[in-house]
Length: 138
Image (tube, rainbow, N blue to C red):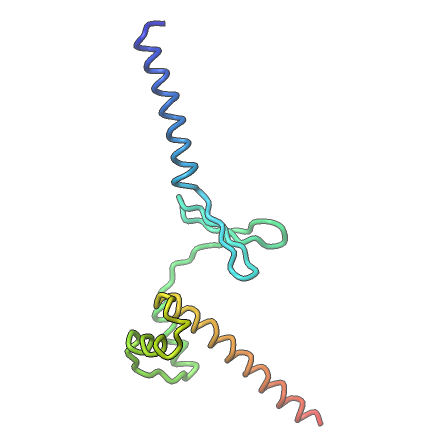
């Protein structure tokens, strides 16, 4: 085998090895996230996602929908009062009043507010319904 073929073969093997190392450490294919009790796995190359349910990965089908129009219809149907609020100013005031919130970025704080508020609203609605049913049963 002449020297050009040897160098080509060595370069090819080194290139494959370096590519594999790069892809393994710097561009992993799958990202696994635990959100509450749910475990999600996403293929970062294709965007496909799976949820771990009943000891197996079940595919999550991606559906492109016009969520803005759906949200507007739900707001109208649920008759939720909507106030015009300067979000940045309100978050700043909230963070000044409660120093523990200062370390959170605005996006994370908004997500946390949604989670805590919706959980409390749902609990209150359930308990109110439960109390009414108990009173009617007496």
